[in-house]
Structure formats: structure tokens, C-alpha cells
Length: 286
Image 1 (cartoon, rainbow, N blue to C red):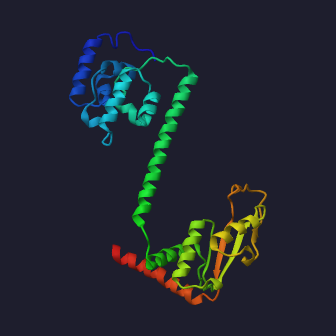
Image 2 (tube, rainbow, N blue to C red):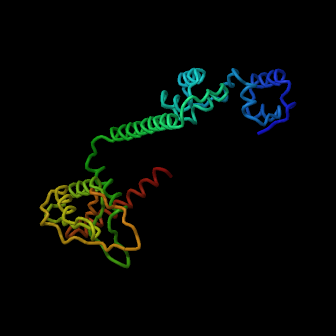
Image 3 (tube, one colour):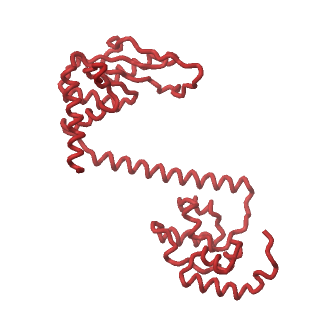
């Protein structure tokens, strides 16, 4: 953008004013508005070498990373290289170093793109490591569950995913369907806590007709510890040609339906326990 030749003619005096305002604690935006500076490059030159006030630092910014970022920037490093070196995002690096001179571009576009890609990959890896650590810490805090907690967890799980009795359609039996092997394992563990004999359990696979129903039955049979021949006939879901089925990978095994024979009384216990959980939680928070 072109500027009036005389607008920034007395640069030294303008810089003195800018530095004075900066040292008094003003932000870049307020300095820009106060001095009517409409060009960020000019503002950077006016404040060159003048560190930002302490209050403008991000509350969670680590001082050692910030100091290292400024050191690298003064050596002519780009945001991409600093990101790759320190593992910080560009949004963190920018406020730390934006008052420093910009480095000259000495790389080809391909080289710059490669550095940027590596920096982004490093950032993604850091985020993934943080995710794993958080999940692992949460897993360790749970520990072993006594039967009562397994029962209550199973009740909540059933009320979210299992068949429920309706006034217009009596369904007082334990029936559960899910595609997650861990969820199925927890449900079966809950059946053990309830004392449900294995002979009363029935299994059926529900899967798209274009998928491998036999392979799915073999997988679920191994998980629940029965022979595949003990499974009821698989329920095949018709494919709508107007929609695109996305669950087509090799690990797609449909859903497993679990029934318990003669389970009306068990279902009533589960429903009663669910409302006990609801009422207990309400009393604790009320």
C-alpha cells in the first residue's frame, strides 16, 4: 500500500513517541491508533528491539520457550523452522517474536513447504502424545471395579444402548446391541455379576448384506467364547442404493445382539436400578 511521502518523514521522533508509549504499557493496537499508524511494517520498525510489556504475554507461555523463540528469530529463523525446533504452534510463536525484524527469504517454495510440513507434523505428534497421556492417566485412576460398580456401569450402558420396555410395547427382557467389542465385554461382565448362566445367553449378528457375515460371526464368537454354530441366523440390513455405506473396511464386523432368556425379572431390576442412579445423582447435587 502506498503512503504519503511526508507521513512518516520524521521517523526518529515518531519512533521516540512509539517507544515511550510502549514502555508505558500500551498495546501495539493502541500505539497504532494513538499515532495513526496504518502499516504494520512501519509499526514493527518503530518498535524494533523494544520488548512487549509483561501483561501482553500469554498467561501459559513458557518463558524459556519464548526466550528461545526470540533468540532463533534474531538469528533469522522463520516461523516454520522455529515451530519445528520448539514444537510450538505458530499462533504461540507469533506474539513472542512479531516485534523482531523479519528474516530474508532464502529458500525455494518447495523447501519452505517441506519445512512447514515437518513443523506441522511435529505439532500433530505433540498433540497426539498429549492425548495418549491424558487417556492413560484417566485409565489408571479407575483401577479395578468391584461388582457393584460393574453392575451400575452396566445399568447405565443398557439404558443408553439396550432395548427398553414401553407402555405401548412390553419388552421386559435383557436385549443389547452394539458394535464395540469393549462395550459388549462390559455387558457380558455385568451379566456375570447378575448371575446369568451362559446357557441363557443368545447371540446374533446384525450386519449389512454386502459385508462378510460369516467372518463377523467368527469374530464375535471368539469374543464371547462360544462356537459360531451357536449363533442365531444373522440379521442382514438391506443397502439403500441412494446412500453411500462408509463402514466398508476389513475390520467392519457389524453389531452383536445379545439376548437373555427368561429375563423379565432381571430387566425390572435393571430399570429400577437406573432410576435409583438418577435419583441418587439428583439428591447429591440438589
